[in-house]
Length: 406
Image (cartoon, rainbow, N blue to C red; front, side, top):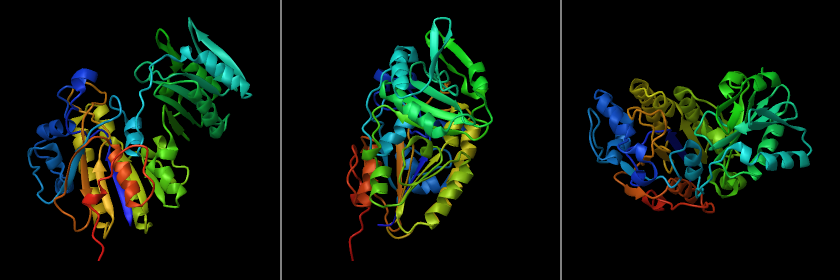
């Protein structure tokens, strides 16, 4: 055993899933990697090429070529749709469960009752026929009005007025009475309860919530925890490893969305920053697991900017090369994605795509893992590597990289 590093290039898919015609027809034809390279034929990513990106894609484009010595495969999405939160839960070993879509008003009476029973002061706020909850004069509970209707509820707070631990406790109560994909608990400093109230909007009939950017919660001291439906940290790689005493470090957006109560979590968005920090944390470990999310690839897809996406890939490639120089012996690196986000599709939303599975280990070459049926195979491999108990879902591919004992 040694060090196992997973780098997730968020939104960097390699072609539509076979089921898009049935479950997500708007993603037909999406291929984030191919379309970026086609529009940027001079883009050259030497380290991703060495790792086998074109092998995983299945074609050569522009300056990018196959790598005969690469260790590579592909992974399909088991989770519904194309979602960063559920993608990372799947990577960590969770078997995704299908949530429901529903406006918050459907569960508002249940949430109100449960919060009052727990001792909170709860008030209903109304606009027209729609309502949300105002808790302890500092926290709003309503619809997430910045995503698809009915997917998530927001628990939004003014952290100068309320402690974030209380906000999470409120979120957990809301989570207990609902089956939507996510209950997102978050807040910021330098905002007042009045700022939250002034940012309340009704986006369409039946969906009412706080416009988070307009409220100002992102500007200073932002904290966030995502509570997903059907997510049990006890069957995921970070918790299993942390309880066993193995060091775990989550860097970038992954630290916002994956539970890591026994490890170290480091926020960050800037690609150079998160990958530099990955190398720094790696050098401090003799043994342990690191997972880093490169979020700016996904943000470039949302912005529908091929130029920006290519720029971020170039930065990521440079630091992946440096990271590989710090890996030795039994150390393992996996570079992958969680879904697609094709900036050429005409949509700013995620795309349901297969993802590359690129593996580096010193002295191992030419291993082909085929198409894995779930992103959870990565979490299963991580736990197999550290000889820990298996996660809820996934099949290990460690046998491709298990070196014979001398």
